[in-house]
Length: 96
Image (cartoon, rainbow, N blue to C red; front, side, top):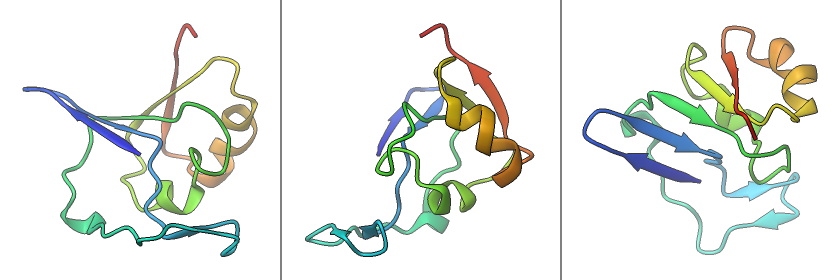
């Protein structure tokens, strides 16, 4: 996860707020200390690709569902899953 902030734009890239992934198979040690409710709301969300450590549905669900989402135009997960899981999120396709 990466947050890039400029004077007028806040971009959140590949958000993953969990301390473990894959039902506990992968555990971050030391654990992450994030207060998602205190985190500034991003202006745009970027998900680089569909691997579990970049596309974490539970973390996406904790963000406002009306955020613009930037993905690769090749991302089959976005075409397939996004409208079902987060129907209000607007997908913006990059040229990559």
